[in-house]
Length: 401
Image (cartoon, rainbow, N blue to C red; front, side, top):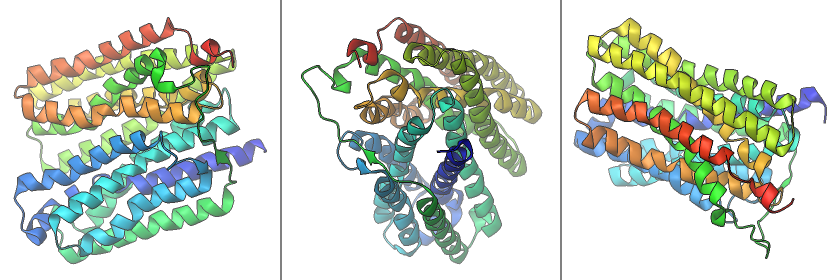
């Protein structure tokens, strides 16, 4: 496989991630239209996003089953369908609780991240963090695409007819992207893990639990910081819109930048231990700069300073720099036979933040100081977990594979 072809596949993976994750916040952006159409209270509106987040968590739980194993292309098509089919159906469903159920299944789109980790591991070694950074940036380009599509339709004050149009367009985009990807990408088998007497169950390895937690603090910040900041400031609607866009762009760009740094650090020593050292280094640097960026955001909230908030988001977006490194850990540290399952296991542990963080930050935290102290604690916890994992034997070293 030529160098150019491999990178073509990386960009195709990114395109699919962007198309799928465009659904993440789309319904809540049509808030007024949804409240009027379904005749629900504002509190009920939040249930659809909660269901989506729970779906993200369950998707990683299912990764340990045979659902996303076997044919790579079949698995990707199945995952995309979990997002696309509800996207077709939601605007025509009259029962709000059925919409909530459909949003739960849309959360399964996150399984693409683990499956594409296996794809990239087959094509690259030292370049894995950079390639993964490009793919992961699709999450945020998808978020940006979703925001712009909603704006085009009239935003939160749009008529329900415009909502239907946007949902149908975005569903068609997902299948169009899948069709292009399907034609150009080669298939392979994702192995169904067979636990051996050598103790190859990833859940029984201490390394899985310790390293899985290293990405938990980053996801805590990524999933809640934007809303927390906006909720505690008094910016105009255009300013809020610009802040959301700035955060998406910052997260996407830092994903690529820090992924490239991970690649440069990996080139000098592409052994398992060398790759892991590069992973820990990139994640640690990302957390240190995130800590500084959070102080800027705290200052922006205290002063209700829009410009400073933009600067804070631009800096703190580096928290996503932990992602490309984290998602290249499984193929670098686990034996070949079990690293696809390890990707889902690490994802399940880290993505528990998706379910915990919103509830803690928006139900239990009533003051800015308390909230910001929790945020500042997150990079510290991430670094401590990274230091602990760096002292452990890697699964591939323990099993001698």
